[in-house]
Image (cartoon, rainbow, N blue to C red):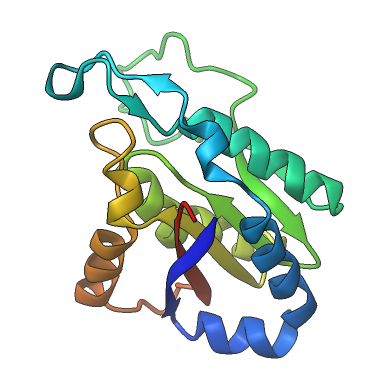
Length: 190
């Protein structure tokens, strides 16, 4: 795979280049080492592209996971203790699931990495909520988000978001005082 785009959100590129250069080098090598074409295995059942062979996001995610783990990156889970004190006094919840958690794909030396080949909402959630939460909990200082560029996303299932859309929204949203530095990579098949 290649890095076809990069976007520095809240000074992400500058901080990561300064404090995490060796880890950044590892991430670039991991991306370059993935042969996306091996993952063009999903046969579409969607009306608009029935029987078309598409890139398989699950398979791509599995290869990223394997590559990061080989370099001693770890995933991290934090348990969610959902508050119940905000329910109205007459409400009795049913089925509030114990054991819920949030997970960061990869973590090493306070740098978090998320790989997202899914729906748009997950990209925004990763950068604007999850990374902020993991920072507040003391696990990460900065993050890297790896997402497809539009050309790559067009060869996945309908609804997969892409780098260009994500960057536009972040620029229009602006930076909040709780946002952490994040470097966003837009990737494509070679």
